[in-house]
Length: 337
Image (cartoon, rainbow, N blue to C red; front, side, top):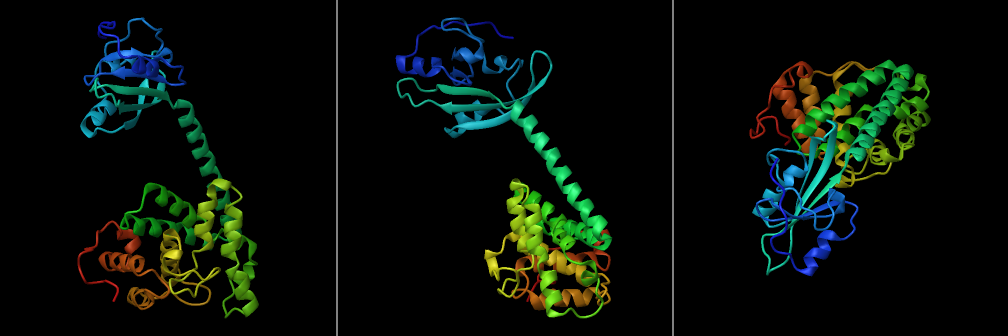
């Protein structure tokens, strides 16, 4: 721990006011080396009282943080913010939001406003919400399992394939998370459709077909009972839309359809074609590939379908066991024509 320092030169009144105003967060004025020139009451210091030598010493650290917001702010000339987990004096892990922002004083260059906000409570709440989210998904998945085991297994497979496709599409972690939840629950609405219709081996009547198609709307309604799943509900609602506008329930076209819904549509169709159904036997791999090529740009998003075709061609007949084999995405072979 470095020695305490006092003020050699009192900063101008505007700077003093900024540093010492009553603030709900801990604030310090730093120089470019991380020396603490001033600190407000939330840092535990009173006006005129000597303060710690370096900003990291306030965090009970012996050396600078590996990802230092002050260093980032120095290099970029812009505000830098990081989240840092660090033990407090009692050894409890705290989650701190550290922000360094250059101060716009031409006559006193190289000064930074450094703030420390304790986000531990918010992190703990987020973890509790995460647990509650998993519980909610598990409950709905169990309902699906009890209602129809085949639909439950199908949903798990669709979820695996949807995420595999997503890995090659550069989507964000948040989008992947929403996709995973929506894929796992995309058929939850079938709990509201009579089982004998779902399992009917022959052709459906128009009335029966209408009931089956209602499952995407019922799925949205079920999932959206949790307000934070409204986006997931929208994905479920639109997973039977077609890019040419001939899908249901809204007749959306192209990019009007959420990307996650377009991914699930491809994964859903693959699992339906590649496995036995009550109304027909499974199709062979070449036939499945041919169907995706034929329907790309009409029923399916051509980019999503193209990724699946390349995965299938790279993995061979048992792609689910071999999907860790990487396809050559620069090759023309296996593309959608």
